[in-house]
Image (cartoon, rainbow, N blue to C red; front, side, top):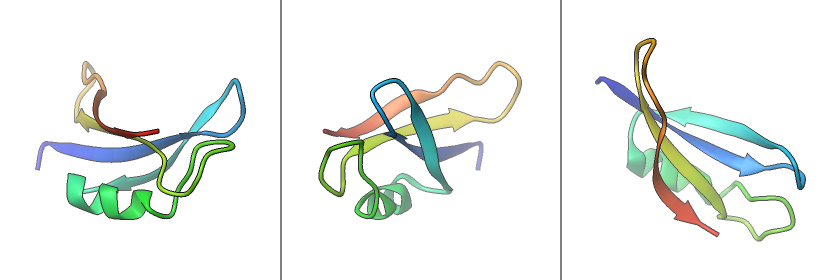
Length: 65
């Protein structure tokens, strides 16, 4: 396993927060059902994939707005 997935949600109009880290995209999608963006219904947010290492950059892999 060379990557992890995380859920990021908005918490107000200027900020967002990571709500959890997951080993697979499927487990992150399942957890997204219990998360929501600010003033949005449950199940909204973004899932990112990021590898390990100093130069790892997050990549948006799923979005439900």
